Length: 267
Image (cartoon, rainbow, N blue to C red; front, top):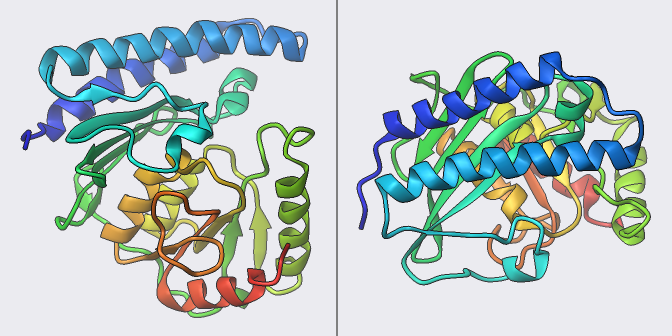
């Protein structure tokens, strides 16, 4: 079992994230979606290489997952032992458009379980982290999920599919869930980076988060931070959040129960 230096991880994510922030502020805005994807691939590859190289030098025995965009590889643990799951630019569209809601997300899997999560938001220089069984923290201070007791007072967020035309069933579920919750919640929003929205649930800035679909790698780091902050995390039907889960709900216990009730019949 490798002992992970949180300070090292924090400094690494800040170094890469702050360079991304400088890049984002000074480049020409994309002129088309094709231009956007070209820019994303270039910058994402640079950031990923920086993170992977540094982590491999520090922890050479920990493997690296290349399955961020390969959902079929996310149904069960990829490796025995320890490996990193990393999203170098979570919230790519926001990043490329110069909007602040993007992060770097890093999660360590050990024997099939997430045991360490780090999320860095460069624009506000917010560093969230959690170790299994040791609590959740924002910039070194312990955090907890919010204390609101019902949807009528709650800010709830979600995220649509990245490729709605290719994921029509999930797109329709997202729309139906939105319609179901708009009359019930205080406010419903879509704020960009999935990991950032989950981190905001962990510190009480957001009261609940839900999302349809699969792709558990988008959720693992944020879900661990929410759990360590005293929150409740399940799949979209209220079952255990684990490999092969469909969708996610994260909130405090009371708001989670209401979200689960409202979303259970969305198909």
